[in-house]
Length: 308
Ligand SMILES: NC(=O)c1ccc[n+]([C@@H]2O[C@H](COP(=O)([O-])OP(=O)(O)OC[C@H]3O[C@@H](n4cnc5c(N)ncnc54)[C@H](OP(=O)(O)O)[C@@H]3O)[C@@H](O)[C@H]2O)c1
Image (cartoon, rainbow, N blue to C red; front, side):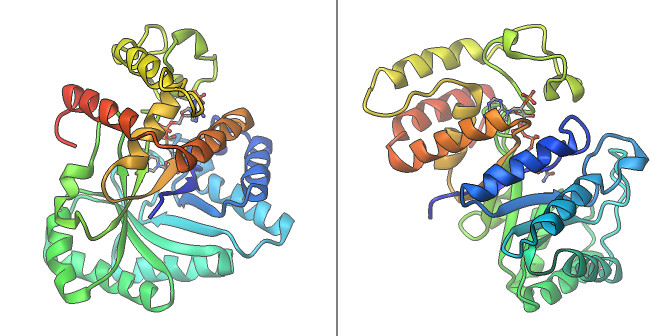
């Protein structure tokens, strides 16, 4: 199955202003895409006043356009946006959130996903799975993200037989895929962080408000992976007869697109021009063969980070 796209909202109301979020949604929807990713704690900017701000922007857009065919994936469990691991995955709280988002989003709610779990204790995880089973029975898709002990979930799921979607960080520097080995070949994996938080091949492309800077990354120096990537791009672009690959973003997308079990790719676009660019490259990668590029990127990843 060709991986689909999902529009990310982690920076909405933080580095991405409301008006830009509206422009992004307008264009994304008009281009025929429907999947949007959210979380109760977006944006995670440590400002308690902004707790749930990203979802409020999304809801405003939905109400303004009277749309009921979006497919929103809501990640739940976090009880603040302070970047702490505090969350509540009790059955009653998850069922309350299921109600909350079904009321708020109506037919636009597509997936309910657990967001971050460090627990290893089977009894409490079983309770969370009971809540997800209720959501699945109600016709939603269900999922996992940021799970410390996937093997415990996989073991318990022998009883539940739930069909999970799993969000993983997956880029040229780091991938969570190996950690979810217990779900390989079974779950639909959705990649986030394909730009490793906003890395550019050329440091001159960073702006004052670059998201990598907001997240505390280094925007002064060229990233060490830039030089080997440029060599790979030069070779890939010499093949002709297909649109060129020209940025870290294109590489991240090509790497995710051909990776095993990947069913969705999260776009973390911060402006309209980036959305246009990503949609153009998505058309290219679904139309032309970029397997050779993927193989080269995979080799580079193994050199940098280890097992795919
Ligand atoms: N499950 C989880 O725990 C989890 C964690 C993180 C994120 N997510 C989801 O995944 C989404 C994406 O995550 P992320 O923001 O960390 O991802 P990312 O893709 O690694 O970084 C996004 C940044 O990459 C740059 N970028 C994006 N598209 C570009 C393009 N076409 N050309 C050039 N630069 C481009 C932008 O940087 P500049 O703004 O600097 O230009 C943007 O802010 C989030 O919005 C969220 O929905 C989920």
